[in-house]
Image (cartoon, rainbow, N blue to C red):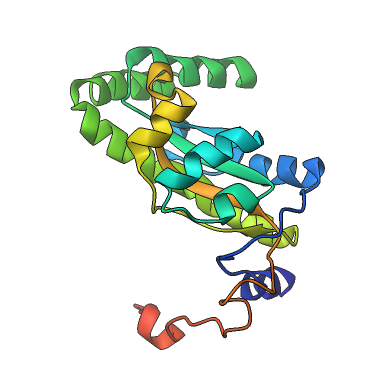
Length: 210
């Protein structure tokens, strides 16, 4: 029940107070993202952690001028691969073999199947697929932040191209997918803080097929 209590406590804070989040908490939030499941285990994204206030101030105007961008402790930018390449796919398969200490024929056959599939697709199709994987890690970060008693505000309202330029993401083969300011709520300035959480009742959300 503790986790559900934490999830009931969390909400998308609309104002933060600038208080710094302890680095050990940030590390655990990032570790939760690192441990997230992804399609074929490829982890086709990177997380840019922006602590620099000047960079946050550059991002704020291209993120609908939302105050949490500059008033947060850490701004996490989930950046998806711009496409799948043989080099990227091989890196993750080689890493798996190295960590597990052996090669598996079925796993190597699966590698060849992916190599014969993803690189042949369009960059936009691959980016959209990679973005979905980034969102899984993004969601786990939100859960981990709540568990740590830290606020996290999901933000899709921003200009990806502008953020990419500010952070130099395109040169790294990345494109920004979603933003996650991490910090602490400013209860005196946040209109949402005391409002009840609204979610669909379970009966309208879940269908059980026996």
